[in-house]
Image (cartoon, rainbow, N blue to C red; front, top):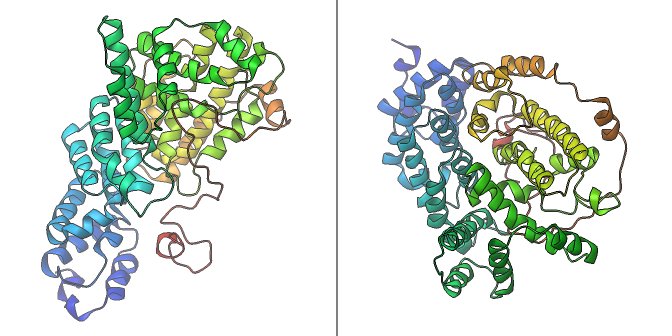
Length: 463
């Protein structure tokens, strides 16, 4: 008999349970899980926050291939407290989602989607939008579109949210409609542009058809470098909408990637914080290393890592953007080669940042290859091997790998010398930039920086 089996836990309070779980059974995930499951069976009415406790070690259970224990808990809790689970599912469902994308278990992925669809607002800051990116990055495009269609409206209508958190969902639907139009046009079929406009207005776009008309015009036209140069010279920024549309077409024909994938990559660079810092049209799309580095860190939510996966994919996809600009004569061969070196530097920074979570990012190895990077057979193994091992070991492995990835001297020099001051201006295109957060990195299970001695999620996280 285990010591806890001789205790009547209904006579104990919540602190007694917490103390036994996290002090008596400290760092023994297996025993913690056994105790909690025993408690679920024999003392299901004990007054504790089951979700709050379980999410403390659900990730570790999954990393040690005990995912069934997590599923059993979810099933039990959903049956007992169905409304509560739909309010508190975000972290456990995110952990499960990571695992089932890793194992490519489509039925379990659909089960995660079904839970979010019942209450997408609850997971908006940590999981709802992240799941959209997981679907797109892993190539489940039709599922991503149906997911976006199913949840954008309740998010827009919610009085609990601020800003426009549904935009990535609406943008996904928007560009999928543009792709349908483009494909019909390629077949020579007539499409109802007025009906398309009505659909966009329903999604929340302004009742102004001029942008749609120009987008459809560029979808039909061949690429014109003259139009780009004239737009830059006239300082009207139309060139960015033109490039946005032609990039979608380029990716569609070159790599057979849908618009919803390419738009996610393109919108990462749709800002004059990056472009136009050097004199001359021929240098317009060459980005200084220091500016690119700052831009990257400004857009990464280092506070809680809520957009880690999103930014990881966007950084990895930058090579598509600058290869496109090079192909169409907007970036010289010399500048393109240097941009690839800068992208390599950012990729390595993202590898170091994601560290023990690299197994979440294996999707990048399924993306179409370009000729920009030599194959490194050890890189995929590095990502894959972060699953199931201690984070400290992952960190050492990552640092060993990156120790051989020293940037060239000219890049080091650029990173330490300022260029012109960036402007804070968003260029017209099909998407907005992510929310910028500049706070220090604090995980939800780290000690709170206020000095209380409590975990951050139990202290100042929501303040």
